[in-house]
Image 1 (cartoon, rainbow, N blue to C red):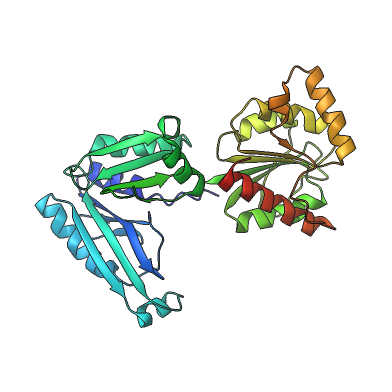
Image 2: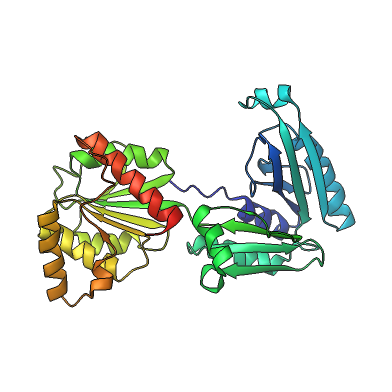
Length: 327
């Protein structure tokens, strides 16, 4: 399942097809706004839309303004108050206020910049779109070039204005992904929880009896040897790896690949004694203490979990802590 919304890609396609395109982005909110900052709506020159900035409350007005901006070739900032009645219609208890930035593609949002943004998203590279609303400048910044303040935005998936400035930063992070090695009973609880938390799960187990459609209906299952499978799945900065077999023949090959990757979380099932043996094997394989220290073992927060479901809760909680706060 691809959790990208596809708004920049759709806007670029409309623009290249000669239809004209506008990207509308929520840049600020007050109160109980229907959509979070960074949410986007694409509007074509013939009025077709993709996405949402309010869940339906103000889209009509945004479309009118977007088509006028496309004709004029200028950017616009729009502010809307969402009434309590309109908010209730989209599932909120009370209303709020949203500010929307409207940018015609080509004249305000450069085509080349939009192409770079779409390429980064396709390659699962975190990138921030920066719009200086005072000077009109637009730029992209990759995670490797980011300041600590911007890295905090990447960690929190938090778009918004730089404090005290007119520079809006739109964070475009790849969808979160969870790679689970070991299609065991804990995985059966962990995978649906991960989906609720926003992850796209991949289950790896060469044992087809365990890694089967019957046990994991509708999920992506790779019945390959773990070291080959994790490479095929992809290991990047938006991926968490959880090892659940506590069989060194299965866990260790995947673990060695992960320790040389940028995955943000590595968790391995097993007791403290089992983890100690794991560390000894990795030391013998040439890994440093710092590299081995990236492994969370025993996996999950220590909440006194009993049973597969509670262990899965503890794993999701620890993954979230590491993602948002760092190791």
